[in-house]
Image (cartoon, rainbow, N blue to C red; front, side, top):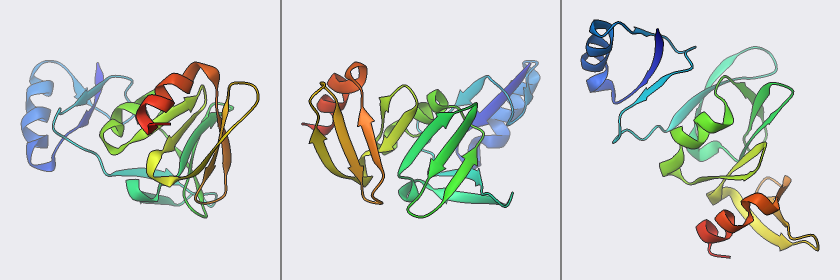
Amino acid sequence: MNIKLICKEENYEKYCGMLTKGGFSISDDSELLFRELEYIQKTIVGVDNKGTSRIIMFNDIYLIESFAHKVILHTRDEQYTIREKLYEIEGIFKDNKVLRINKSQIVAIAKIFEVVPQYNSRLKIILKNNLEVYVTRIYLNNFRKKIGV
């Protein structure tokens, strides 16, 4: 069985050995994830529209959205395709203050510029790069609790 390993660099060999001994093989394409509790991931790999891979720092992320079986990461001026699914992003960056705002979008809380109430029990969010996204009713209470609105 394949497993994806996310941990501190100094612990990688130790965990890799333990998992391999237990019958697992380490693969970045795996559906199963082993994540060290104290590990806080600060980067993610994205592919631009020319097919070039780039390491993206968490501080550069504004929005991550999913549509048509693709996950797109938005920075200030660029877009990248990433391999991770939205639920994986929530787990990977949970300590870095990302927040699911609807079924297909996650925002970086630090990149929110303005929150505008809407008539239909939704909120419009304007990000610092001028992207506009909406918090749907299902995610509204969690958003208000995390943001303090």
